[in-house]
Image (cartoon, rainbow, N blue to C red; front, side, top):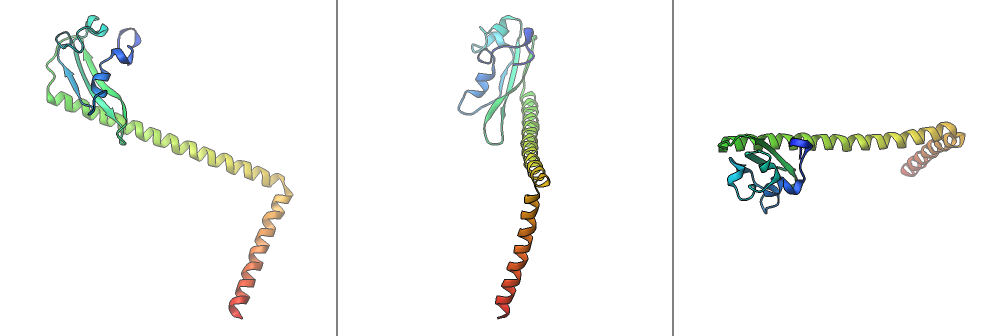
Length: 154
C-alpha cells in the first residue's frame, strides 16, 4: 500500500481485502472510517484518516490485481459519481498495466529471437563448413526441382 504515513501499511491491515476478498469485487466507500465497524479499529483510522474509497483493479482475464483508492483526513460524503470516477481511474490503470506487460513480453520475445539469430549468424560466419552446408542445400534443392520437373514431363 502506497501513500500512507511512514511509507505504507501491510496489505492485511489495509482496506483492500474488503474490496477484493469477496465473491464479486466491488467498490467500497466509507465517508467516516470511525463509524464503520470494518475500519474503526484499524491503525490507519487511529492515525487520523477518516474517508476511504476503493475500487478493485481487475485484469481483462478477471484476475484481481489490487485496488485504486483515495483517503482523506476529513470525513466526506462519497457519492456514486466519485465511485464511478475512481472505477474509471482503476480501469485506465489496468489498461496501461496490461499494455505495459504485453510490450514487455513482446520485447523479451524479440530479444530472445535476436540472441538466437546472433548465435546462428556467428556460427555460420566462423564456420566454412556451415557455409558449405548452406551451398549444398541450395544445390540439392535445385537438383530436386529438376528431378521433379523431369518426372512431370515423363
